[in-house]
Image (cartoon, rainbow, N blue to C red):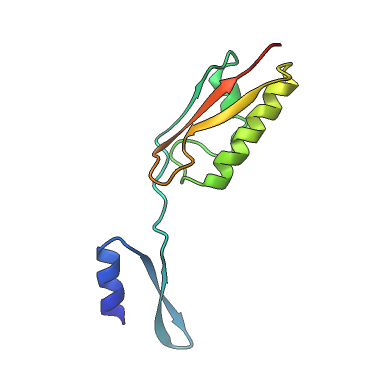
Length: 113
């Protein structure tokens, strides 16, 4: 069983961990490989400084890609922009929502202030 798990790991198809349960080695496998770290976070279309926008995100470059946090970041950015007077602000995720994306790009349409 361990040989099979090692072969699967070497093919990068699965992420396997050996777990000792009640004195037995039991390989536990998941079809999800660890997410690569994000290389960048960028904003386009904004007039507010990126450093202020980055504070509204729960992740930073170097952290693991997490689609839930990236989507929550979009919503947080919209709420922040609306609190700054951009009542019709819209934010879309141009990069970062798909498997294999190495960074996050938010495109911001602030609308009228």
